[in-house]
Image (tube, rainbow, N blue to C red; front, side):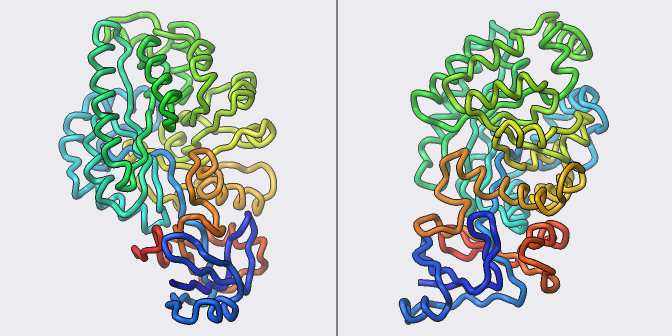
Length: 406
């Protein structure tokens, strides 16, 4: 048995003092240090510094590890020039992305407090790294292929990768399914994959309405995507429309990624069907996609997470960097309330969305913790979330299933 006695603990969305946590692989008790020591006299006391804040382990729901080799290769500022640069450099970047490099990025994520992440896998190349990292991984096997002539082949490849990931469900891997996007997946195989997710109760995710170019293509078969599809796929017509795509997910709650260009009617539809959203502030800014109106998500009661996306559209996989970006991007409402909302978007919200036994400091939950040490005493308990986001570059310690990893 171990006991953590920080200055502050984040419980049920609030910060409390004079509480300690006893844990093995799971959280066993929460009480004063004195009472826990009497109850567990042989427990090891895990030392913390002054002004230490204990959080549940942070959760990053959307990461592309396969592009971890990118630094200055890809073009930013607008979505289509970026996509063209991905197509042009993809083979080289993926080839340079070794297991050592991907593991290094997993470690970098851990230093920002990430104890669970969602890995979007196009080829399955990340599986070995995801099996070996101490973090828990929702392994999203991605389906892509809009051409009817190759759709069956790509779908069978997707099923093989999904089956391979299932073999490691006892190694911290949660098998899952990702749909690349409405413009890149044929409706026939889309429905097959969704049916697999429904039947096997697998987590499901999909990019959706990331850019204005995507919206124009899906609505009118026009815009910059028209040139793109004519050039690479000899096609002048989208395989689906926005409403048709959304309706395909009606029976399976799905974590839609980006959703920056969705209108209010579409957001209301997501709310009505019990879907959720992954918000990637830095990626959206770098690709010129716009701002996700989280004030509308709050109004419509759409749960959302904050995620880093991959290094193809970001400069780090630090969730703390991402929270700072979100703090500066969303200028409406109370700053402290926004900070609290952002903290919940990497703890309790993703845990609820994906039915994880984590995301909260609560008896019976997995002992996944991120310990943050503030540079000085906060002015109030209500300001701790904001001060955490502003002042933390790396966490002090991380525990995953009771094991100290940092």
